Image 1 (cartoon, rainbow, N blue to C red):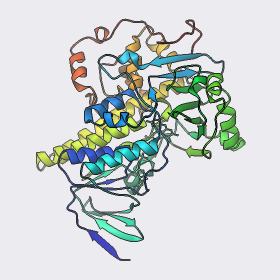
Image 2: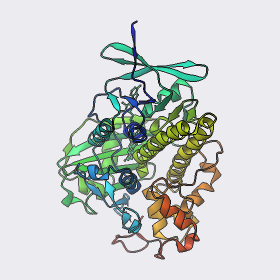
Image 3: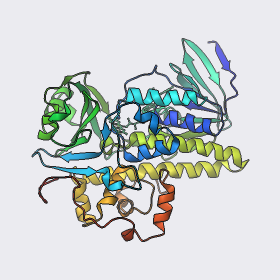
Image 4: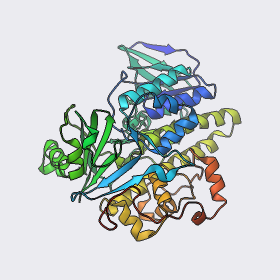
Length: 456
Ligand SMILES: Cc1cc2nc3c(=O)[nH]c(=O)nc-3n(C[C@H](O)[C@H](O)[C@H](O)COP(=O)(O)OP(=O)(O)OC[C@H]3O[C@@H](n4cnc5c(N)ncnc54)[C@H](O)[C@@H]3O)c2cc1C
């Protein structure tokens, strides 16, 4: 085998060009570092994960990318509708975040979002190679000494002091180092496809909202990703595949929730059925000498509350900041900086996992959980936690969720308490008791027309 050495004097190599990889590369470029990003696919490419969170918009606004996202023309998402088999519903209206925090975001076609982000990374000065598959990680004295990748049938070897693994579910480093652990509690499968012919005037709720149908053993998403396209997916326990085909499960689920079925009237399948099995996992170690995992490469939690892309971008940018702190700080700081990054990473994913557990443990009804543990809690806190408020220690719901030891994902770790999206607001708020930090409206569904007590 002939191996060509790549001499680019790179400060870091990023594996993967999804939201985590692009964010990491953009972050590195902003700090003035030279990065090589290796992506095994050719873009644009299909990817699932289409509903965004308002905090993701807040993050991209902070980073200076939101105006470009606005130019993509994606459907605007102002809220999330939770519905059931009886046709009842409750709506989370992001309006409760205003005026301090951005009260809306987008639903996206990932092929276009990811391509736009990768293009941004290129414009910032990152060397991006598509169809470059990283297939080997070489070690020397406990550090990664080089990455080998294949492109156009040739093998290349690249060396750099730092590697950010943003390879998503492929988890290049997690597998190489045997770090990935399966989440035994959430053994679900997702079965999904896109439909065309969407007419949002059929939607009995709010145009642009995600709909989440909660059944007795699983749930369904409906996400409009363009003016005429909608993504629909069923998430059910994996064992259901023993007695029924994916096709049967999907057909039954997509017709099960009257408000979703109404929205889908007149649509027709655009893509084949796709399936994701065994999708919840984590790693207790997400950093090591000279390497960091960002996004899905280290952890993946059920997508019901749409946080995957937000967490991927947040950890991608943060991984770049960590490398900068190490480079600025001289010898001896690497371990401390990586430890801080790992705790930051885990705080975000841990909080998100807890929201999922509360939803699943309350039989796919988050409101029931809140009714039990925090009756009368301010709607702003609920809206905030469902919008991406995963790091703040001001949010009483986040704190209650963290008090549930049965929902621990990682081995014990010290949390990082700084919100990466609104750190200034967070600091100002933490000076006040939480009961004074938000308005005083009781916990009721904003924008719902249902009589009290009937909505889920
Ligand atoms: C069924 C389902 C529904 C979801 N719904 C949502 C949702 O509504 N909202 C949301 O925010 N999130 C959702 N997610 C999660 C979301 O898709 C992910 O969290 C997000 O894509 C993570 O971004 P990432 O950059 O870490 O990984 P990815 O987006 O997967 O990017 C990783 C990239 O690495 C590349 N790569 C892999 N291996 C290599 C290699 N060896 N060499 C080079 N390149 C490589 C891949 O080709 C890929 O482009 C969903 C996920 C699933 C499974």
